[in-house]
Length: 149
Image (cartoon, rainbow, N blue to C red):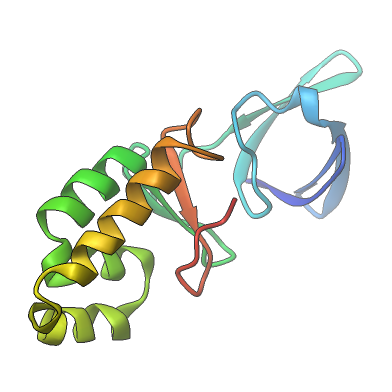
């Protein structure tokens, strides 16, 4: 399976079976392509068409971890279930890959009288529905749990 190796301006380098293919970003047939995404390549004459591959690690766009350790999660699930409903138990931090902070939030989040979960919810809403994620259904976190914009 092919993988996006590098995005450099309007050019995308894709590794496929030991060779590197360079295509224009306009040939990538999905929103917000990222380095490490698994893709399928289709040749249309001299041009390539690139579509996102669905892998066994993917749960239909709900949650996925790519080869770089980036976590991609459906923004509605993350904001409303992970942060609003279960944020007081640290679920949002576990989903982001911040296991240590998730445990601390689970054990001591009540000490803040709900301030910590409320702040995390406000940040999640502002990041997911305004700004770079406003036009996509997926939020991406890096291997440290930070929002990738």
